[in-house]
Length: 202
Image 1 (tube, rainbow, N blue to C red):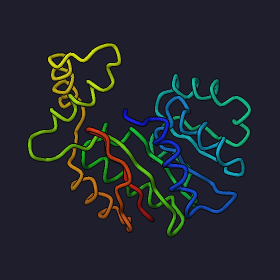
Image 2: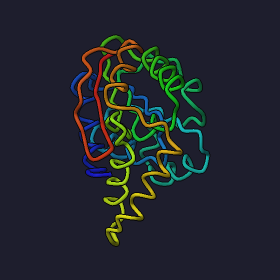
Image 3: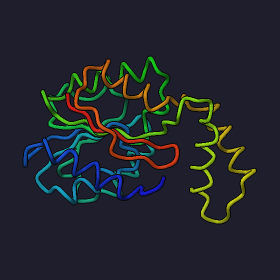
């Protein structure tokens, strides 16, 4: 993903704009803990709950986070397994593109229900123009990710395969889902090939 490490810093800054100094932050799709580590190092007074369905990924997160685990609770599961809150902010990075539209909307609604009024949500995932060109944008992302060489045929095949596996929505559809879930002040803050990122307020 273009600017992967910088995305974590951008997400932290957007959360910090509205979150209090001693904030409770929910990270949905915590994976191996990379964003948790970035957030925890940048904000030593924040506390976190990280949720992920894969126990192996949570084990990686525990190893990565080390002493930061004193401020982090890891939960195996999906959004329904997250504590009820209310959280001062939430992040969901590189996760929502795995969910079909109906489940994505339900997940966004459940995220909003767990956030304090006005709290920020930061999301980023694959979101490609809805003009039938999604496979090309996914191919461009695949080509960028391949550091060894640029193979246009292989990238095109990867883009087509990704489109078969993940329900990519257009940016307009993603923004509409945020609004339907009850979020306001929806703003695009990141775009890199087939990836988009938004910040919104509960």
